[in-house]
Image (cartoon, rainbow, N blue to C red):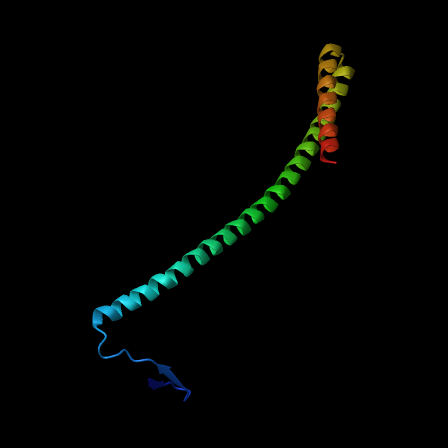
Amino acid sequence: MTTFSSRDGKGQDLSMPERSESFENGLQTVGMRLIHGHEHLTPARHDGRALRQEKQRGRRRELRAKASARVVTLFSLALAVTGSVAFAVAVVLLVAGAFSTAMDVLTFAGVAWGGAAAIRACRR
């Protein structure tokens, strides 16, 4: 046994190779230790990668859920506003005397409001 001193004063015992052991045997021993260490390190890397990917998938899933809820809300609001504008246009057309066109625009307003109500009902 040989002791190497470190800066803190505590020594570390290292075994010295026997003199009869050849250089090739030493390399082979080191190679086997590296292979053995690599066999344990590779699954750990794969596990770490899998955990990171699952975390990213979860984060993306949350973002998609938030974004889809906002898109549905905005789409419902846009349909409601479109229906209101179409209703206002239909009232102006009725006052102007264009009854057939006003009826078509009123139908469009009703469909827009119905779509907005259906989207709100599906969200609940």
